Image (cartoon, rainbow, N blue to C red):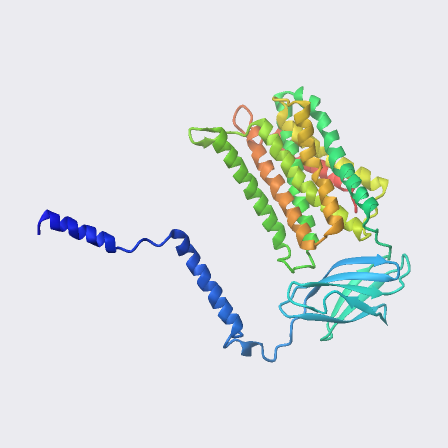
Length: 410
């Protein structure tokens, strides 16, 4: 066979060769097949598996999410956490069967319903509300001391915004007044203050995690305590990804090794982390006040203010050698404090336990990531991160947060 014939044969084979399948189609194909199989499985009512549930009583798992009291009425929101539909058939309050209406007659899995119960409750009296399902199951809701729930009007939202300023913006701004002291401190003092900052952030991470777990301790509709750790992991990875992106675009690597974070950016990350934590804190405060379970007296406001003032110190400590302008300090303070306002407003309007727990987890993961980023800045001239002084600073930070936290007993 001549060379021309071989060339012609190769060209003919090339023409008859099938074009390659697009990569996106290769990835989409299995997903389409899975969707088709699941659809058929559902339409055929799980052939061969229906007999497994024969003789097994339905499983009823219902969690109480919200209780509100208005004149002559009690509103209770519950959610179905189980795999089977649930219907509320009766409401019993202190051995009295009360008439009620509800937004949904039957709750499918993960669905909720709000019951409006006609009952002339007495201010200050305790009540036990029992919701009886159509199968005879009982869900209880405790009201320790009946009190009128606040109306959600313009004055209420103004109060929530003011509350966010009191517990978020003002304390952080006051804490940032330590900037002149930090600037004039020698290197050994700076390392101690960095240790204090890590202790503060570490306490916030632990406290937010425990608080989030407590919020969903009796509510596992959307994963229960898992949403706390999911939020923490997502926040940690998100901040790590943002930091890596900024390093790559600003050429902050030396010989392929990660360089220490610039103080200005580290202060920004601290402000973001504290802001996310204050978002979850504001959410918890707003939701508690909206259902009348939080007595916001002057003592409690002072407790929150003292507790959160230390957050301002955490922001300015990395800036000891590179003091920023007043405008930049103001921006950092707003980033850390304003989310408390947003959290209070959200918590007062669309409270949902899983959402609160998730956001508390986000705050925990964010401040934990920042605390880890601070560790390299504590190194002394010998390259040691943990020394007697820095360890004492961390312990002091934890102790200060624990002591001020005792002032906040909501």
